[in-house]
Image 1 (tube, rainbow, N blue to C red):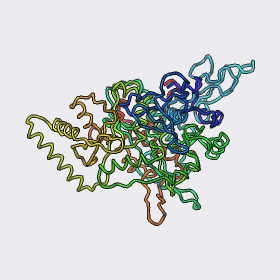
Image 2 (cartoon, one colour; image 1 turned 120 degrees about the vertical axis):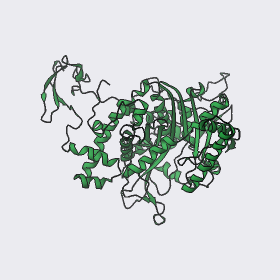
Image 3 (cartoon, rainbow, N blue to C red; image 1 turned 60 degrees about the vertical axis):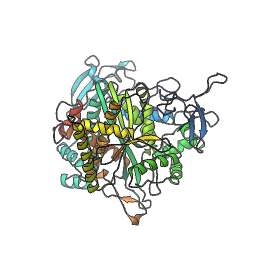
Image 4 (cartoon, one colour; image 1 turned 90 degrees about the vertical axis):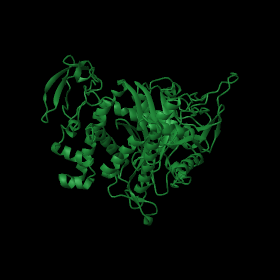
Length: 614
């Protein structure tokens, strides 16, 4: 993906948010956030509106005679919004630079490894990889640990460089306990706590964390080597489910017993089970104290959120202020009422696209910085757009979340307009008992059997589509936006009661096609991954709230630093995609998707070395 800055010059992801860029003063800021790196997410998100995908004017031209499609206003001191002059809907403004920064952070995972070259900065061979051969380097024996040593033939300061340096030939080159890597790897994804791993493997707790770092590097290298191929791989159709899951970290000081809560947005393929990405709203590379100080120096506190230098990052003062407006949801026991209350809560938020709801029992991380969830959502879908360069049609099945909806429609606006992408809300009742689920399943089975009796010769699938067409005709409008929701006629134990809303309904699909798409709508791909994470990774299991700790949560196995959450998610995503096999077909998700020809073992990942020329 080409990365171009707002002034037309190439923008490096490594420089984003580094503190060297100028910030606009309140008087000099654009009327709307400027495009950045080719990104502009500020436009009407109503797919049937004539302004859908029409970006907001950054500098309205005086006396141009062309009316601006939007009007700007403020929903609050820090929350400017734009109102569409065509459909009347409003949307919050976002920093395109902030989205670019978050996307750059995600795309870095696909980067090739740093090429080994002469380390002398002013040498003519600096940044010329050793793989270029004998013209530039000579093999110069091996180190005691077995690494290949090279002699540089380049020139520096008018003389032959002659620098010797070593290049590791395998990823475990500096490890003394390589035979224990597999045991630690297997234990991490089989719900063994850190202390128990250290105990039965016979290593220190710090060594366990060191091995987590190593395994994370290996998993990222292995996964990225396969996933860079996705862009060129032809997929006829993808049916993708998207949702968020929260994770907590324990407090580190008795004087402040608040938890840090972060969330990962995850996209899974419903057909193969492959998880394409799981991104946490947390940037471990940043120093909170340094960023907070630079934000004040830049005058961020005087600017509305989308115009700030650090727009994507949570600042302490903003986090504290947000606690006062948080209202946690509770299930009403009725699926329709839950859908309606979700709409109502979204409308009440100062930023309708922000799912962040900090509570008094929560705090920002002490190391690294928490990212506003909506920026992670926008970047996540743009990351997916980068991956899917050769897909015929994509169907997104989204949890009912206005932030997920906006991000999906923004990233895939061209595909939606060309009718090669669709998006559905999916809402599932999750409070039912096993007996209630079984009762609904029996009822739906009877309804299908009745249709099959009334229409001799049809199968169960055809009967289901007949019921679905009937349900579509009986769709009910719910919420302020009058979205039309359809109750799925089939109940399963995993999805006993399910409601669906076609967000990109242009009315151009015939009834059979529409019924088939509604019938496909499900969150089972992403829900299955989330359930596996909770069951198989000890540090990512749910914490337990009690009445005696003022809403705080303590879970003895939870990590103390959010960076461990992302590392463990990345590690488990790799294992889920490539190592774990289905009980029936004995295939991994990667095998079903065509990214692996056979089974992948723990050793394959541990000893994997990515070729610099991949």
